[in-house]
Image (cartoon, one colour):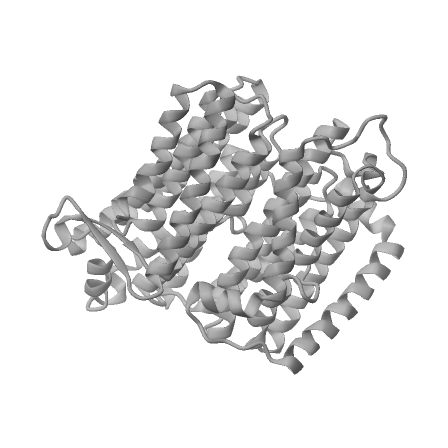
Amino acid sequence: MLIYYVIVPILIAVFLYFFSDKIGRVIAIVAQSLFVLGAFYLLFQTQNDVIVTNVGNFRSFLGIYLMADTLTAVFVLLSAVIFLAAAVFSIDEKRSKLFWFLLFIWESALIGLFLTRDFFNIFVMAEVATVVVAVLLMYDRDRRRIYDGMIFLMTNVVAIQFYLFGVGYIYMITGRMDMFAVAEMIRELPPSQVYLAYALIMTAIAFKCALLPLSSWLVKVSSVPRAPVAIATILSALHVKGGIYLFIRFQGIFGELIPSEFYIAIGVITGTIGVIMALAQKDIMLILAYSSVAQIGLIMIGLNMGAPYAYAGALYHIVNHAIFKGALFFGAGMISHAYGIRDISRIRGVWQRARTFTIVQFMAILGIIGAPFFNGSISKYFMSADAGVPLTIAMVVINLGTILVYLKYISMFRGQTSTTNPYLKDRCGQSVVIVLGALCLIFGVFGQWIMNFLFRLDLQVGVWGYIQKVIIFAVSLVVGLVVIRYAAPVNRLLEKYGVRVNLGFRGICASIGIFFGVILIVARLI
């Protein structure tokens, strides 16, 4: 049955060409809604057992296997929901059939990446997703979009070659492509035989995760002028999660060839620099993109802490990030379309013109900053529950930076409108933002039960521990309000002279090489 989760989005994409634009879009959304139900069904099935499909019925490791456990099913469900939201949001936009075709091919590639357990199939699915995104960026033939699309394509090609060389090395020493067969053989090999393959593969995965200094591609794509909002949203809310998913899987295959403290340090650096770069921006899309980089840093900290509560909190934060960042990116796209600009210093009066929209945007903001009773508070509570003093301080500082970023972000909702007709008339877009904003509250109030259901866990939110986190958040919010009130000159200085880590092709390639060298040296020394 698993093969159908890869095929169905392709069939939706093909059937779009048999109908007129409007009817085809409606049929696609209905089909995608049914696909979401199918993803829920898969999640229920994996609650009891791991599902494996042997494509081609070959024996042993020679076949191509698709596998779905609880973690995979959550990522498949998340993909189905985010692509449904993107389809509904885009229904009233004047997009060609090619846009819709590529949108569903992109979904198929990501789901295939989640389901496969074959090293080479991961390469194929990642390449298909890369090409699809590049075409989505360039198909309007705008010169700036073609340039940024080519940068995205070529840098991803360079990064994925590291993965391909690593897989080739793994095949040379094991003769296997199946992830589980390779994992069993690696356990019997000395680390000196696999550290090169590990460094090659993890460099590509770090690029896909948008870890610093490899995050420029995400920022570039998010800031492309006149690009469909759905592209930036899916990239930030879901596409980078493919890299995080691969990180989880490959860490399970290779074990700790590099101490987890290395990735914790990378996570702290990514989170800290991410919020600083977000504060230095005026473009609302860039603010959100750098904020995503910061949240990825938090997720990496939680995944590598080696504690069950922190690990579970990081998994739940992956889901939560997709929800509130989807709401924020869609909302930012609607605001920039209504006002005709993306400069946060020139946008005012959103609350005055669209109050329901503003309320749900605030719900998403409360989610990302970890306000009590919203989804971010639950995942951040679990991530910090087992952290020592240094890591707790680091996570509080990153969250304080996130609070500062969104205190700056909400400035555009205040004051008088700066244009004559900024009313957000897109009902489909508003409905998507409202649903995602409401989920930020639902996944907070019922967070413990939802997390336990999604990941088959039995974790409890301690009352006293949660109260402590609420107190820390309240103090952080007060500090943030004071800083944003009296540090305006510093913020203006950041905006004027702040370093924008938005490298060109050569700079990105150099950062890939440097990251590979660092991993290789650390693995060799250990």
